[in-house]
Image (cartoon, rainbow over all chains, first blue to last red; front, side):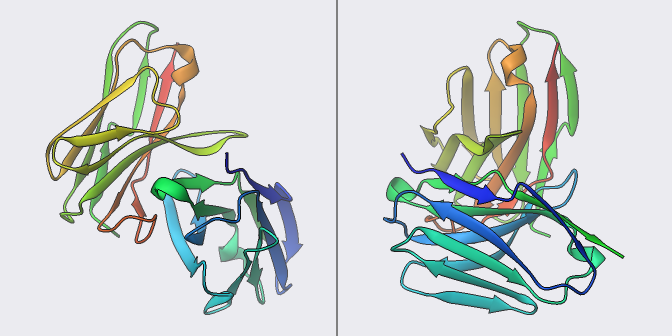
Length: 111
Length: 113
C-alpha cells in the first residue's frame, strides 16, 4: 500500500526566505507526482505535475523535483511571500490510477 | 476556476439520518471523484465515476453510495450517517485519468452529531 509522508507538518518562515518542502513515498511504481496548494476553507489547486520520466518542473518561483528511485520529491519556493501561506500537499498516482495524498505541510510566511 | 459547485457547503445532521451531497460540474469532464479530508489522514478517495452510470469504490467506501445519472452531477449518499463520517468532503473532476488536470470543488463541511 502506497504511503505518502510530508515533513514537517508545519513551517513558519520570514518573508523573502527560500524554502523547501519535502515529500516521500514508499512505492516507486508511480505514473506521476503532483504538488497542490490548499487555502483555508477551499479546495485544492494543482501547482506542478511531474511525470515519472521527468526530474523536475518549474512554474514561476516554484520548482518541484522528483527522485523516483529514492521515493522523494521536494518543492522549492523562492523568495517566499505572505501570499504563499497555505497548506501544500503532494500526491502520487500509482497503479489503478489511484491518487494517494500526503497529509500536507502548513506554511506560514511572516512579514 | 473550473466550474464545480458542491452543495450544501455546510451541513449538520444527526446520527442515523440519510444525507446526500451534490457535486455539479459545467466542464463536461468524464471523471468525477469524492474525497474526504480528515486531520492526520490527508485526502482519501470514497468513490469515483468514469462515466454516466459508471462508478467504482475507493479506499473508504463503506457507508457511502454514489450515483451519476448525468454527466454533470455526481451524488454522494450517506445511507445512515455516523459520527465517524464527520469530515470535509471534496468533489473533484478531470477530463483524463492518471490524476492529471484535476480540479477540486470548495468542499462540504459535514458534522454528524
